[in-house]
Amino acid sequence: MSDRTYQLIALVAYFVAMLAIGYYAYRRTSGHEDYMLGGRRLSPTTAALSAGASDMSGWLMMGLPGAIYVSGLIEGWIAVGLTIGAYLNWRLVAPRLRSYTETAKNSITIPSFFENRLHDTSRSLRVASGAIVLVFFTFYVSSMMVAGGVFFEVAFGTSYRTGMLIVAGVTLAYTLIGGFLGASLTDVVQGTMMMVALIMVPIVVLVSLGGVGEALEGIREVDPARLSPLAGEGVTGASVVGVVSALAWGLGYFGQPHIIVRFMAMRDALSAGRARRIGISWMVISLVGAVVTGLLGIAYVNRIGLDLSDPEQIVLALSQALLHPLLVGAIFAAALAAIMSTVSSQLIVCSSAFVEDLYRIVRKDASPRQLVVLGRVAVLAVAVIATVLALNPADTILNLVAFAWAGFGASFGPAILLSLFWRRLTTWGALAGMVTGAVTVILWKQFGPEIFGATLYEIVPGFLANLLVAVVVSRRTYKPDEEMEREFTAAAQGARRAPAV
Image (tube, rainbow, N blue to C red):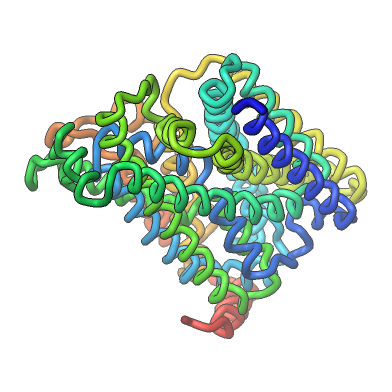
């Protein structure tokens, strides 16, 4: 058999497995809450791997290794920031959010949680946050479609658009039929594939280069600065801003709906401790693998003279150069898994935002069956819009993801933290902060000034502006509410029953 045939066998097997899991989830999905939140019955392992796989997306196997390959270890600060942020998210947010969303009228979406937590009768907070979800996730899903098109371009020589449509079609199929449970179960398989690939590839490259010493020498031959976490410049204003911007990616975790919805779907708050240990272990292994692969790629491309037109293809190119075609197909499937796991999760969150947070405001009497059907229609609509936006990509995968990540982190992050840990947050404080954060991210992205010769990542000013405005407005609009106080205390007590370690 030809190399291409082996690769296609592995890829087709992966597609069939994903569709089979989607069908299995379909058989276990019986109502609206099942479709949107899996009936709140995710095990710690499923919750952890699902959160990790839907979080990392195509940037883990394409964007991050490509950035390391181009710029060196200074881009590794992103991985450090993400690991710290993910740990704090699991440690602080997960148990209390799981407890509070059940206490607050069994909220099954982030916008509905905000409304129920703050007793907002105006519906303005629910509508605004639902709209933010739809806008930023449409761009986020579009960035993953771009990653899918690039993947098929390098892996199989198809046109960019053909590859993008294949990814969109298969992901849409298992998401439509399997809902939240289907997305979560496929995430477990996809997360495992990603981790194994990011262990296998750097080991093979390192062996081919002759060991650690030869690999480091090969990197130095290209540019010694690539091995410096400060890009070889010493501690300058620009390098400090760059490190702060990279670490600030960790702030985004508190506001990512497709990640924190996994906390809401756990069996109970007690699951958070075990899920955190599993999730962070998976994350550290995967991120280290991505960073090391990018670094080793510098030496390998220089020594072998490998043709690499796009740095974000470094993992795929190294696999093709060094592995058996069947293993290459498995690595390709893992790269595709990174993309598809995120797309499916985001489509479900978009669907829930439209149905639960917008449609049900005007149609309270809709039946569970109608809501499930409408949820599937919403998945289809968002996928189509995101695909159209991805037809002519104007930026790298990493930059597209960075913008959407900042949008959610700065819009929802402070609101989530204040909702869970500050009794005096009000509807108008949360709403004003949320809008301020979103607008700040958009304006800073377009017009943000350089600081010491570098541009600060837009999540930093957006997050801080949101936090400041939310606190100031809440202090001016706060009125005691006995029922809200009782719910806050009950949620805190429920979360404290979860183990701390």
